[in-house]
Amino acid sequence: MRLTIPRERSAASVILVFTGLGALLSVLGLLAWRYATPLGNPVHVGIPPPPPPPMDDGKIGYIYIIDGYTYIDGPHWFPATVWFLVVGTAIAFMTAALLIRTGWRLVHAAPGEPGERWPIVAALSAFGGLFGLAVSIAGRAAQPRIYSVVQSEPRDPQNPYPDSNLIHYDMGPTWVMFTGVGVAAGLIVGSMLLLANLRAAHTDGGAQESTS
Image (cartoon, rainbow, N blue to C red; front, side):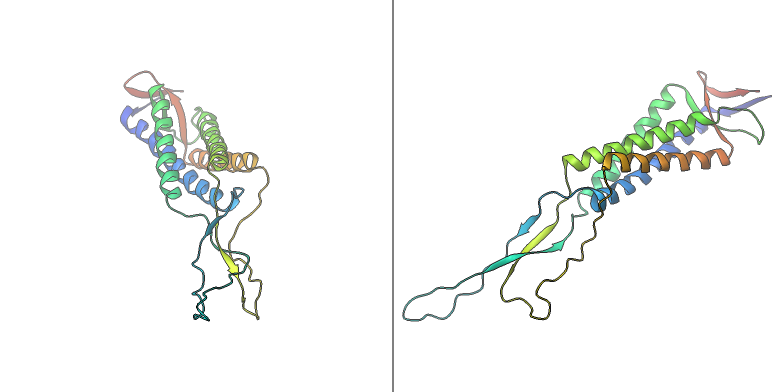
């Protein structure tokens, strides 16, 4: 039996699948960068000193005691959000374009028909793993930084050492964790395609043909 699917339709499916996975991984990468990447040195936000006391015998002076720092804000969402979404989706689009250029397509096979089931799963898993590794490398090159202000006297006597409400997790080696999450995401998307009876096929012609 011969199954013929227009080239444009199957090529568009490759682009849709990879850009969708790229957008998903971009969101996961952004969250991983903000909440699970080792933090860089904090950014200390300066605050003005208190006003000087009234003049006394022609002399002006004051004492400003810095007792520590308190965290007030986590890593900024902007421009990190733009970078992750734009760059991640663009990389996924270029990967899909490369696969299309080399002749790979997605075809819909009837239940029970033989076909190449695992190339698309392997491709998506590899893409996800490499994406996660890239997020880990990006986190080392541009570490997230938290923002703090000096904590001066007098403090609140009811709460002299306030706890920070910032959320951050220590996930272990990021190159292992992020790569694993990317592979898992690729496996899930690939398995969903298999359940939808989508198969990978290779063609050199203008139409996709699968013969069984």
